Length: 262
Image (tube, rainbow, N blue to C red; front, side, top):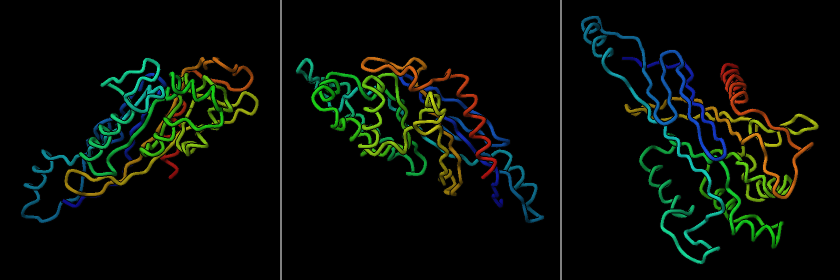
């Protein structure tokens, strides 16, 4: 069989602060889910004497692509297993342990076949509170660690806004995460512009079960809850939020149009 593929495949991921929602869609003969992509190839047969056999074989065989999305959320400043507030260690948390799991999961597939995202609430715990109170210019270690792990995209949860607009901007700029931070439902109250990335479209050439390289388009939407936390600052007149469901529908349409114009 001669494999020929010119249909764009897409997987959409939405990060929403304290939870992630994954949706699936079909594009003609191609089926994509958030965790596994099953791709059916249709092609031209040749060889008159074997054409019927090949057609029967093709009807029962499918070439597949595994696209793995690794998602983390609600780190809340927990870089390691130390609880600095209570002065004890615990065995079921911390980004350091989580990174071991991320590395193991990544190693199970080719590099191109994995996407790593975080759904927010990276800040707000004893350590981030202490660092914020001591020196607001210091970049939080948890953000520095996120940058080293190599996330493809992150979004912001409600607690990431706890310390004010200027503070979160400084943290993202100082850690180098600004160019992968997506908050699709937050705009500037005065200008209407997006202070963070509105969305993201990633192009990957992933390896199929037959060892072929296939191009995949992945649209990413990041959202926070509409009520921004005003623990230290008020966002009234500064940032405007949008309903998450309505925004997801709008962003999905935008991403589809972006794909069609490529």
